Length: 437
Ligand SMILES: *Cc1c(COP(=O)(O)O)cnc(C)c1O
Image 1 (tube, rainbow, N blue to C red):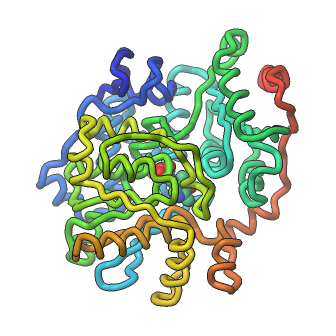
Image 2: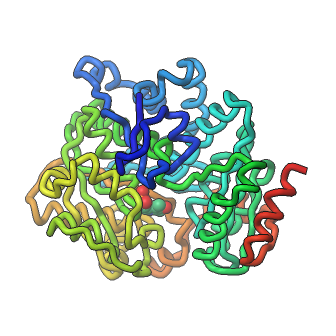
């Protein structure tokens, strides 16, 4: 499979190059030259399959030509040693829990696959790849734990001192081994500026092979299609229901784009809801056909506070920039903080289920969609994080304490290891240069 840039001026590349480069040289995002389709007999064969067999069948189509299949099978097995439960709330309403990975959020799916592919390609090239990431929290922790112990790779994370939650900081600073955390005495913008500067520093690039691991990397997107495919087939096999509506709590729109990819591959998916918080650039685009990104607004569902979503370019590519075509598959619904809190209470009151604020946005959007459209299709809300990650919001909404899972408690008790640096680029450059000594 060949990958080309959404800006269309870079030369098409292999999955190896797309993975190691991240962003295309023309500033565009890599997309597959065509979306591989599953035939009906192929889908029937997969129907009773488990998560990893479905994941493998999809991965094979996207990267099969470049990784020996037995090795790809090992990669898939080691990526997803945890469950992806489809929880039935009531007759036609389900929650797909994507938070059983090491950092308790769905970003583990993308980061773990990207890490293993990067490690494989790095060893093929006989290189040590240095992954450099600026993070405001959740992406960095998934990357830290995703790359932990992966040969031929090491990670340097930059996070703003005092501006991430204690839990996030623990997740960023305790992976150890090949993962180094840098606590920057500045804000997230400083971290991003430092990383950008490193990427254009010729002296540094002579010494290190740098890559980034943010959500624009195509190898983070491909594995996110696995859980849509799995849920759509599992719903059919186990519950006898077809063509569900997926409600996707969205920020940078990587998750939703991966869903669209699964639908285009032929998996039995009926419709999508782009569930956003007050940051509604895409929702407004779906209504009006005009894309007008706005400054970011802080909300309760913090991981979705994105004013100018990075994956929108890819989403638009898949629909040839036709907003009506996009609207035929995707309904945008924006959910206020008040409605989010009410939804957390509602879900708990009705089903005894504790949903995190992002999942609550998705749930409310599904209810709203059913009201607006009269749809009686089965609905699947993607649960993007474990509620214990957003303890304060939940405890305030429900006026009760919630239990912290064991694997989170373990991380909270580990010793923080981070190097402190200022906002001067020399400090970052010096740190990176001494890594090899
Ligand atoms: C990153 C994140 C999102 C948003 O996902 P996108 O792919 O950026 O749209 C939603 N919920 C949680 C908990 C996240 O960490």
